Each structure stands twice: as structure tokens, then as C-alpha cells.
Image 1 (cartoon, rainbow, N blue to C red):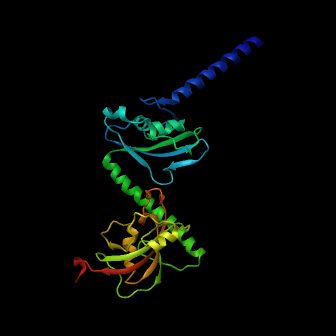
Image 2 (image 1 turned 45 degrees about the horizontal axis):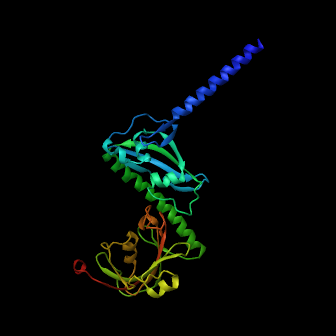
Image 3 (image 1 turned 120 degrees about the vertical axis):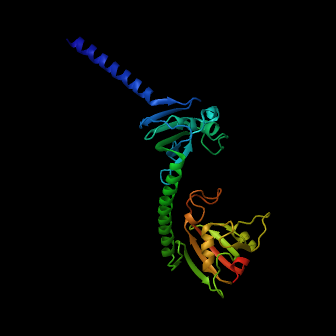
Length: 314
């Protein structure tokens, strides 16, 4: 009797192990180019068709738990499913998106060298540990038509910018309070201090304003100026740049939205310090390697002169 119990127990354990092995293998899928991904949670099973948009969140981290990038705290990413004729040219992540449905959660793990060569299509920088493994976590939020996505994107961006502006406001107010600074607020939420009054009326949309400026972050790090002497002083000097007062036509020039508003609070000869929330600066995109996404910018601006454009003259 004891031998029968033992054999039954042994058979049961073998069957359980086989079941777990089969279950695990069913959760691991492979893209046409061989990239493996593990399904953590299954969605509705309806795959996107050509021309539809897969809306998803993702997080990229390494085996040391350092997060490289994430959309979970900002807004989702999206990809339009292309015609299958383009399949051979797609990387593993894009091919995987073709295989996912609404509600799917998956994980992709690979050596860091594969991440750079197969996804980034580059070479691993020398300062990156070659022993790292990269972990991608994906969650498909929805699959929709292009028209539906346009409306969705507009709505979600409004929500994101509202939340980010509120977050930036808290950071700016905390900064001002820590220095006992009393600032006014523009119509769209820029905090500002007039440090030197000017003369005459404030600048208006359509007028061309000539300014000197210095830009820095809340931590005090300078990132830009058009004044050569200050560029030397702040370690920003670029010998191939021409340093001179800059002309900005309010409402027309290619500068951040925060500038177009800030300049309307200055008159000729005035100086002011403006604390610009990131949605009115470079937003979630940032600018190059210097200005990170969702960064509050501070500008000290001096209006040297401004002139009427033909459209603003009475």
C-alpha cells in the first residue's frame, strides 16, 4: 500500500511539473525575427488591423532596477500598424505590437548588447555595464482607429498638461517660498518678479522686442544666455556663436510659448525673472541633452527696446 502511495505521489509530481512547464512555454511567444516575450496578463485577444493604432504604456529598466524611461507617469505611447509587407524591416518590439491585444501585459528581457544592436541599432556605450540585462514591460491600453486616436490624444494631453502644470506650480512655489520671494502670476500660470521697472506701455502681440536673457533651472544651473560676458562667467561660452541682443516678435517668433506671454509683462528698459512651467516651455519632449522632459525653466529677461510692426500701428 505504501509503494502504491509513493508511486501515485511521484506520478502526481511529474504531472504537475509537466503542466507547469507547458503553461510557462504557452506564456512565452516569439516574434517573426526571433525576439521572445512573456505574456504576464492576457487581454481580449483581438489583434490590431492594418491602419489601427496600438496605444500602450511601457517601462524600460535594467537588471540593477534602474529605470531608463517610462510612460506610466506621463502619457501613453502609440504605434500605427503598418502593412505586413514592411514586417521584415521591423524590429522585435514593433513586430510584437502586431501580436498584442487590448489588455495584454508582456515582458521582454535581453542582454544589453542585443538591446543596442537590435533595437537601438547602435553600439553599446563604453560606460554601460556589458553584463546588464534590459527589461521592457509593456501594457496595451487600447486599440483604436486613427480618428479615435486623434481625439484620444487631444484629451489625454490636456489631462497630462494640467497635471504637469500643477506639479510645476508646486515646485516653483516651494522654490520661491524657500527664498522668501513674493511673485505675481500671469494668466497662464507663469510666476514672475519685475526686478527693474521700465518706461512706457508694456509690449503687445505683434511688436518686435529686443532682449537680453539668461536661462537656468530651479537648481541654479545655467543653460543659455545671449550675453557674451555672462556666457564666459557661467561656463557657457561657445566660440562659434554670435552673442548679441535677440529680437522676438510676440506671437510669431519661434520661441517657447512662455516667452510670448512673459514679454507682455515688460516694457522698455524693464527687467524681470520668469518661472515658466514645463508645458509652456519644452514640455514632455525636452530639448536635446541639456533640457530634460518636464523641466521648469527660469529666465531673467531685460527688454532693451521694442518697435511696432506695421500690423500693430494704429
